[in-house]
Length: 374
Image (cartoon, rainbow, N blue to C red; front, side, top):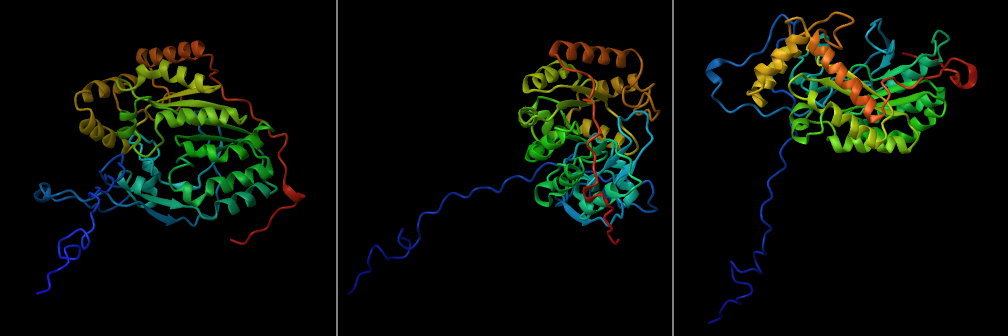
C-alpha cells in the first residue's frame, strides 16, 4: 500500500504555509464632531429617533468631495477686526475638523450642517487658478494683500491630491501679488519655493496656527491637523527658506489652553518665528452647542469652568458678535490674557505685528487682460 508523502499530506506546512498574524485595520481618523445640528435655513431636519439611541452608532462618513462651480474667487469684507479686505478660498468646508472653527456656520448657506457636514462634505473649486488669473488680470483689480484662506485651511488633506492651493500660488507668483497664508498643516512647506519667490518682493508671509503643544489635546481638538511638532518644523523650514513666518495662537480657550501661551511663543521663537498674533475663542451660531457637546464628551470635569471663563469674556454669553470685541473678549479676564501674551512675546523676542507687504512689484504678465469664457 502506498503511504502518503508526509511533505504533501493534508494539513502539513507544505500545503498550508505559515500565515502572518492578522493585523487589525488602522482606526479611521477622528472627526471633530459626530453631530449634525439643524441648518438654520432649512425647513426640515433629519434627527435620530429616541427609541433607536441604544443601537450601534452609524460609522463616521467618508469624506465626500463636491465640485464647486463658482464663477469668481476673490471675496471682499469690510470687517474692522481683520487685517485684510480680500481673500480667496480654493475649498469650502474643512476636513481638519477643528471643533471650534468659526467658519462652520458658512456651510449652512450651502444647505449643509455646520456639524459633521462641514468636515466631511468638502466643496472643491476646480477652476480656482483660472478664476484667480482672470481676476488679477482685470483692469479693475487694485493690488492689495490677499488672505489665503479667509474661511477654510488651504492646506487641508485634500490639497495633497488636488494641488489647487499650489496652482493658485503659482498664479500669485506670476503676478507678484502679495499674499498672507494661515494654516495648521505642515504641507505648506511643499510650497516654500513659491512663497520664497514672493517673499523676495515683500509679497508673502505665513502664520502657522498653533493652539497647543499637547499632542493628546490636539488629537481631539483639531483631529486632522498636523501635530504640534510638525507645525514647529514647518516654521523652521519656512524660516530657513527665507519666508517671513510667525504663529497665530488661535483660538485661546480660557481654562483649557491659555496657560500654554508662554511655552507656545518660546517654542515658536526657537523654531524661527518672527511674529505672533492671538485670538480668543469665538462660538458663533451652531458652533456654541457643538463646542459644549465636545466639552461634555472629552473634558466633562472642566466643562463648567471653561464655559464660565468664556462667559466672563463675553458679557455673560458664550458669543459676542460685536466688532471690536469678538476677537479679543472684554473685561478683566480678557485683559489678563492679553497682558500674558504681550509679556511672553517680549520675553521670546517676537513681534506682535505682521511683516509689511509691498505691492510695488505687482505686474500683469503680457500687459493685457486674459479673456476666459465662463
